[in-house]
Image (tube, rainbow, N blue to C red):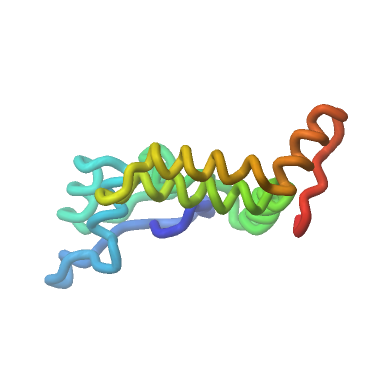
Length: 143
């Protein structure tokens, strides 16, 4: 649940069985699950200690993709390839801005404005906009 996004094989089962052991989910489990699936589903999953299928996890928004075991790594490689083709500077700023929206002490909109502005002065922005205008694929440093 602490990952930026999640991919599961179609035979995966997921759940938070801790209450069946007399404890509660730790390491952010009681906080992250409601953010991902909503309070009602999270409460049910936690209180029943039940397991859900990969398809249910996908429907709930707990995982982004479900695929066969054989296609799991190829799908992950395809996703990472798509990510690494983009600006690592912009991705880092986007991650910080998205995460800021989940912190009570931070204004996510202000973080986004700051990050957006910071991107304008980068070599990645110059390359990305030039490539767009020249109708070619951007070649970002480090990608």
